[in-house]
Amino acid sequence: MQKLGKNLGSYLGETINIRAVLRDVETAAQQHGWTSEIFHASGEFKWLALHRKSEAMSKEQRARIYISAGIHGDEPAGPLAALKLLQENNWPPDAEIFFLPCLNPVGFTLNKRENADGIDLNRDYRNPQAAETRAHIAWLERQLKFDLYLCLHEDWESHGFYLYEQNPDSKISLAEKMIEAVQKVCPIDLSAIIEERAAQNGIVRPNISPQERPLWPEALWLITQKSRQGYTLEAPSDFPLNTRVAALAAAVNAALASQFL
Ligand SMILES: [Zn+2]
Image (cartoon, rainbow, N blue to C red; front, top):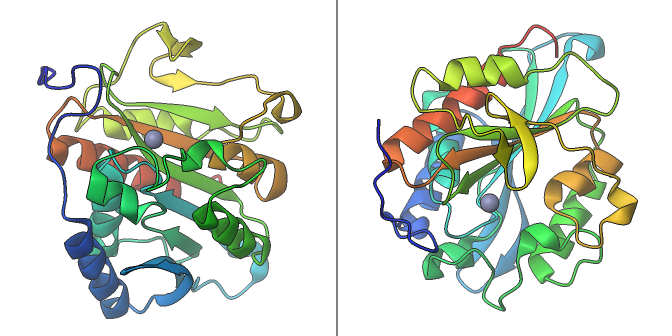
């Protein structure tokens, strides 16, 4: 599979009608028994936190999973993958899932990474300025800890799918399992350096000291406050949109199917 060659200097591929996608997300969530909380609203949009209970009888058997998408408005595969996963409704019975399908709906109306005020929400988690980020953090602070977080993204420059792992306690990694699943549906970025960090077979394990970083993405907030293992998934947005959606969904399904959670 070849790159489309459309992304010259930024994402220039297909866009989505985020209003229609979010309507379908709500419908699918309702059909499959998710509860839905609105943690922020602005203009015509509401920010949803969807929740699916675990069927496990004991607390020990329950894995608490947090999944978010759509923090960058020029990365349409994230919300579409959220919709696909919700429609397919193929979740491990023991998993308790918190699913935030779109953290920056306004960005999608502009096909822009940032929110309406030009703030990159995914750099806003240390000293939050945007109302969306503040509301999101307030919601997160009301939750118990998660066993795993997954943040769904796209990269307009990459040569294939890749992911970042945060795993400070050296738990059993889910990275290889995700790459193995994704490579059946989408090329993997095999570059030795991705976004200025060493990479191997599409896996970046950055050595980050959050306290030294002035601007925090969502993932750094999560790893310092709420979870001790998590992944930022990056679909390559110069490939066809359905390939990228399949890649993100395959990675999520592979992580959730892991017996190590
Ligand atoms: Zn992104």
